[in-house]
Image (cartoon, rainbow, N blue to C red; front, side, top):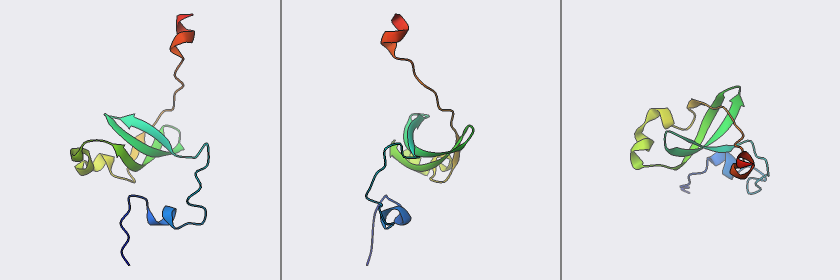
Length: 85
């Protein structure tokens, strides 16, 4: 049997893999114009899980490869209406 999927095998065949928990440990961030899913690892670091929205040339860039470590500093954006007062 052949299985072609963008979802890692251990995530797709694991019990309860079809259940997506709210507040999952994965986050979507845009770095260098590339939207990716990352897994925060601690202070200022995250591991790339997969690329979500990018050009084809980004798949050839080894710094965007799944498993690569990127700098990740979570921030809270202020609502524009509150900032205007």
